Length: 176
Ligand SMILES: [Zn+2]
Ligand SMILES: [Zn+2]
Image 1 (cartoon, protein in one colour):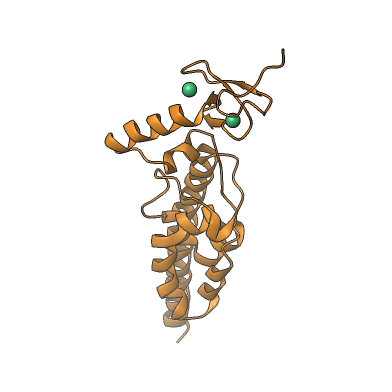
Image 2 (spheres, protein in one colour):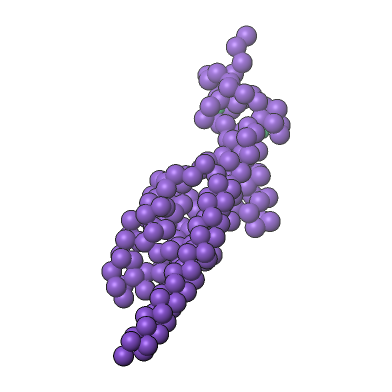
């Protein structure tokens, strides 16, 4: 006897729900955190999660679906939020590295100054939407690296400008 779906007796089962053990077809299958659940069990889990403040977006985080890089279709995981220092500090350089092409506006004087704040606020969401990431962890790790470089490069180049300016002023004063 062929193994058939509990909910669709005309369809072949592709697995069993880890929660209730019912055989399920491809359509009834929901993968959460790498484990298979039937639709009723998945719905029940989502309902409990909704009460505890975890929603369907969290499913993406658990590895069920990673929609990064899909533009407006991408679901933004809850952990990805808040201020992006790397985007704020490195502006258009960060934007190129993260496929956030609107960030190229940062190259325009004055607009670029405003863009730093826009990128700081929106950077995480945009980077998740427009670039494909392996996982939330991969995303966060990469963004931490950008922040680190921003902290090194930006004060470094400001200090370089001040020192260069000071040296020029000293030379000018000594010469004239
Ligand atoms: Zn089940
Ligand atoms: Zn089914």
